[in-house]
Length: 173
Image 1 (cartoon, rainbow, N blue to C red):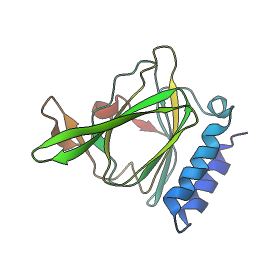
Image 2 (tube, rainbow, N blue to C red):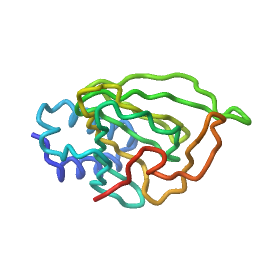
Image 3 (cartoon, helix red, strand yellow):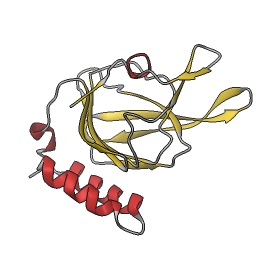
Image 4 (cartoon, one colour):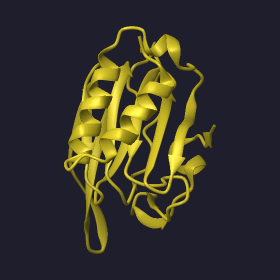
């Protein structure tokens, strides 16, 4: 059974491990393999911050069915994503002066996890037309207050990150 407080405590403990990203990825992987996780977390679309301090942010993100892909954006810290329900499509980019270049992509299915480094730039979307995607996300820092970037328009111009423009939602507690 998924218990939010225990999950957060396990993430905080894993952060102290020598290979903290791998340890947190295992915590997230165990959590998203649980069948009742989605019932325990709110299914309301948006980003719900479960925990945030200068070293760690833990969030639950629900993308509505068929939601459009986010704008390309960075985190400027490592991130671990686990799919509790549904599917998330990721497209990855790299800076290729003077533009942002698409380099590859991948689809994450229910029960799968992904770790990204601090240099990662990606765009996400829920291609499922009839089902929301529920994800657990853990970041190696204060994601809410860090200065980040997003890329807009066909030319992919770099701009300061705006969560409403980048993803269509804002974070809540």
